[in-house]
Image 1 (cartoon, rainbow, N blue to C red):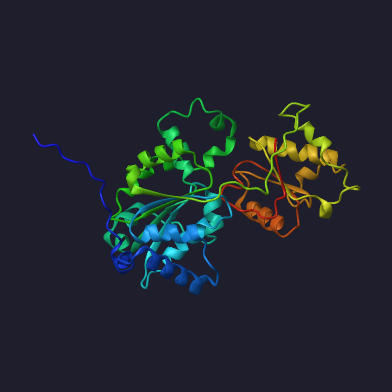
Image 2: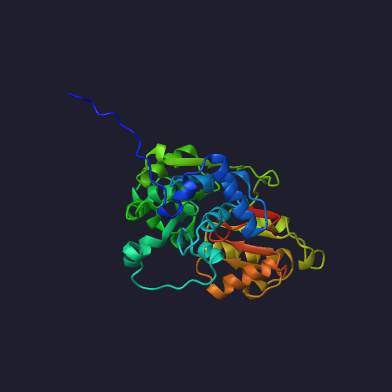
Length: 336
C-alpha cells in the first residue's frame, strides 16, 4: 500500500494580477511601493508592502499591528494595483466601525444572492475581515464555550456586535480563489490558531505579518477604589468644580462602563463633582455626553463630531465606542 504524501495546496494568484505575481519579490515590492506613492503621495511602510505582496500572490494574509499603524491602507494599496473595475469586500463586526469606514452605505435585500452570483464573483478581488479577533470571540459564543468568560457577562452592549462572525468561514468558502486579508490590533497565538480553524484554513495557507503592537505613548494607571463600582463615586475625587476647571481646559477623555445605565450614573456623578447638577439630562451639554448601542444615530454622530472638534471633552461610553477607531484627541481613558 502506497502512502500519499500530504502537501499544502498552493493557491493560484487572482487572474487579473498574474503578471505581477510572476515578478520576483524585489521587483514586486518595488512596483507596489511606486504605485502606492503615485496614489497616496506618501511612502508606504515596509509591512504594508509585504502584506500587499502576499495578497498579489494569492495568499491569505493576517496582519497584526496596533491601531493607527495603517492597516486599512493595505486593502487600498491592493485595490490600486488593478486597472479595471474590481470589488474589495470589507467585513466589520460593529455597526459604528462600518459607519466610520464608510459613512454612506446603502442596505438592500438579497445581499447573499449577490455575493454568490457569478457577476459579483468575477469582480471580487479581496475580502477584508476587520477586527479579526472577533472571529475568535464570537466563535466561542457559537460553540457555547463563552459561558465561563466574564467579558460576555459584563459588557451589556455586546448585542451590537455580530455573533455571525463565528460562522464566517462557511460564507468565505463560497468565493472562487479570492485572497483573504485579516486585520487585528490584538490577537494571541491561541486566537490565531482558532481563527485559522474557524475559517477552514490550514496554518500553511496563512501568511502572518506582525507589526508593532505596543503603544509606548499609552500607560495604565491603577487607582484603588474607595466606593462601589455601581455608585461611580470615585469620580468625585477626579473632577473639579466648573468654576475651577472649565470645559475648555479639561483633558479629553472617554470613561468606559460595562452597562448603559452606568454611563448615565457616570454623567450624574461627574456633574455632581463639577457643581453642574442635572446637566446629564442635556443631550448637548458642553462637558460630558454619552455613547452606547441604544443612543440615536444622530446623537452618536453629533457626539463624535463635537468630540473631534473640541466642543466636548468627555464621553461616557460602553465598548460600543472605540473599537478599531483611532480617536487621536483622547488623552485619558477611564474604566468604571
